[in-house]
Image (cartoon, rainbow over the protein chains, first blue to last red):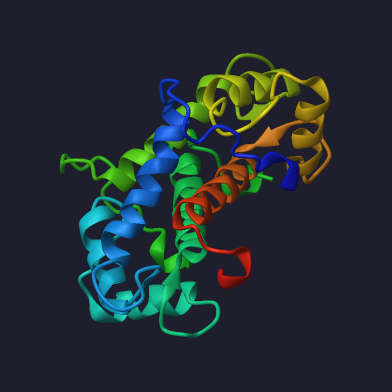
Length: 113
Length: 113
């Protein structure tokens, strides 16, 4: 995997592909919220709640609900520091995207291995 | 995590957020290539090569190189069936996105835990 991560021409003027656009949108979205208070490289509970409500309102139910935010924070905050870092955020977005893809493929879970 | 995956209003007419847009772009990109030959839910070696070249040309070096494609396929194809499924694809995109974020944050790897 390491050999992949050459990022060899980040300042390229080539037109951006849809996938590169998706990657940039995920990075921009995280920093839009993580920069609001405290450590600007992590999401606090308040920043996470705002992100879930404003960015994933169509996908997630009840992000307004404090218990739901606490549950997501507990699930994501692997190192128990009360903050969600970028890697933990990407794991959430990845899991949601896989769930959406399964939903649209209309495949039963046992067929996805 | 399960409690998150309610996907409660996929057919909502709410405006799409940047993050929802990113998720849709990842799903669309995978299916644009996976549907070309063989199993339409997985990427063959040829489909993976085409995706890497056309969608990640700015990020990855030498995707045109057969050895590089074989290396990526070997790294991603966890179950050794010669095909990359959607979950394996999302793990690649997630890892690249984390690497890009680190690059832009100008943080040393040991600071990211």
